[in-house]
Image 1 (cartoon, rainbow, N blue to C red):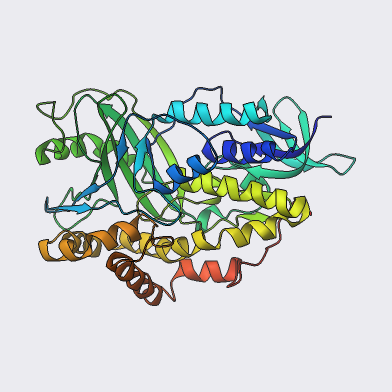
Image 2: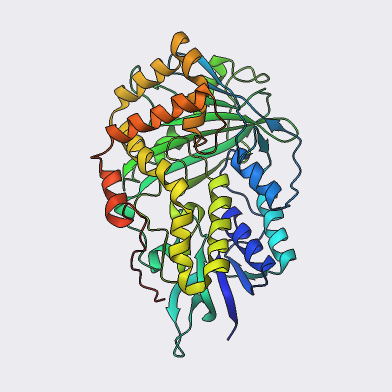
Length: 433
């Protein structure tokens, strides 16, 4: 029976960084994925400032021909706000563009080069064999034993479900649809769209530059508590959204909305805001989308995935399999505050489209955008923690305190208090320590 110090399930950014970090420490690591690489994912193909810094810190050289700084947000009335790129103490002042298929392949290759053993297979259950070893069963009845299991298998994580660490009815879900357009766009654009006046689309759209030219265009749909039945809206509205972008003059190239199916059109689920998922218990740790570590305000997940993968591996190395869960939860505290506050904001915007439309109008109004754009960029992109001293940081910190007061009695904040406690205590799971 194959035996490992750690079994990492999922070889995306979170799992590959976890496996890389563990393998470099001398651990014997199994890196399991049900897909053959290279494989694609629905994604905006941007690696955010925290991700850029982490790649550098880990010595992972992934080339990119596009470094992006400032971002444009287009409000419901067509007004534009420029969110400036601001450097931080522990993050870069720019993002990079890397096609997701290449990015994931190169991260996985780095983990394998460091010593992780790649295994192709689909995890069917977490279990203990007759000798008492913790491990995973793969389709075909293969059992892999490991001292600790790291679930990096995405929003619909089997590891999370098998370990009893997720309540899908309490989670905040999203669905994103992405395609490519042969056009040009100078800066990344976020678009707050109203298909009907004063009824903001529950989510946002984007148009990002790609490697080698072209535009990555997508539409992200946000849901309320446990609701996943309206995901078809993203596909049904996609063509209308493309026409809206063309009307706004976002890109240069096509004379109108592209016809037919877009190249690379692909959809994927997001689990956002951490709420509904306990990140660790016993000898099971969840990272990336499996832990719900997607920014609930704007859907970014790659930087968070890599950061949590690295944190989980560091916890295993420092505290051993038995103590890793408690240490990992402590390492997540800086991330958890943003999720705790803004999962509630996410849910409120979905439930109140008129209020969301008003917020979009106010934030892109001339006077407000001039005063608030820097702080808005820090807050929205979860860059307040680690920001350099400035008026933007001061304003964004005040925003954070105001949101904390507004959502103090919200369902999301109540879930965090009940499940993780103020000190981030370790809850019980089904896999024993």
